[in-house]
Image (cartoon, rainbow, N blue to C red; front, side, top):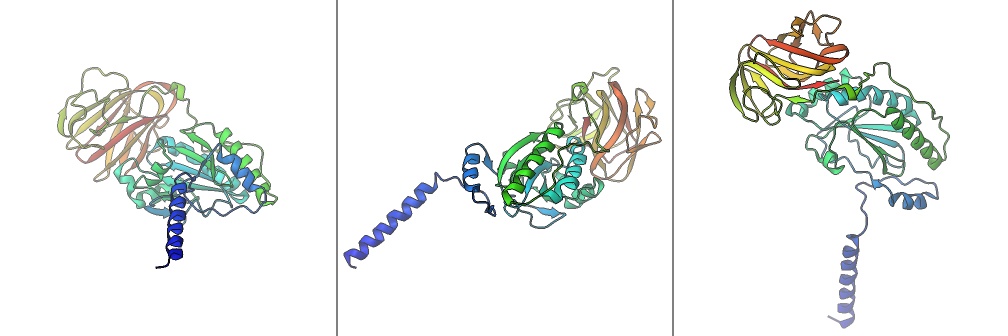
Length: 367
């Protein structure tokens, strides 16, 4: 082989090695966005890159609702994007949905796209049929991606339900919000990003400058909610007041004469699994809470009517939740149930009388 040929090969190897080496220090976008045509976007992007992270792509989706093959990369350069992490049995997520629906109806034509990333807390929330039922129930029109493997959740380093990430026209995450509240601030940020999008694309779009509250929004005064989310399953039942916490298997429990606030008490035979506890015969649940509204995540092998008592009496229509009729809640589907819709915040004792085996209890949550 000629020396010139050998030298050329060596040079090419050195160049390739340099490219690989330098590539380690080059920020990598996790998608290929569509560049905005306006000439000054490169300079704007350079400034933004010093301040914001680049948006992450949808990773390892397990299914789609209200659309197919949704990607962030296909939207960048075209839309302002709101990525909403949620799961359908989470009351905090459910209370944000009216706002998301309102924003989608109000701003979609102006360039907003919402992508719901459904990352399940419980095993039953992996079922796309269950998620479809929830999407229909809550009137969600925007696309939803199932994140059963937590791949997108992990890509965003997310830790909360709900969590909203606002992505601008250039593909940068410019705002994050965790939990409920601050809806006016989020809507104002959406408006500002839509105006920036219109400027970048050199188009005229009418963007409102006022914020709103959906008619079906449920207000919550979190400073007056004194009881925490309470789990039944052995993996997280730290608030179990009788029986053995953190222990899987069957336990037959007796209710005490008096109960402590924000403590879970169970009566009768229960079989504890990591995520839930199941009745194996007639049983009771007693919980003294400090809140206004009470929600229960559960299901039943067969439809089960449980009696709902508040402060020792059958709950009446004025205080019964949307899943209670004539003092009774029928538990069947794997979902969130509304048991109490109080008139004000305060301390009350909730009792659920379960007639027999097959009730599956996951959590109590409050509002």
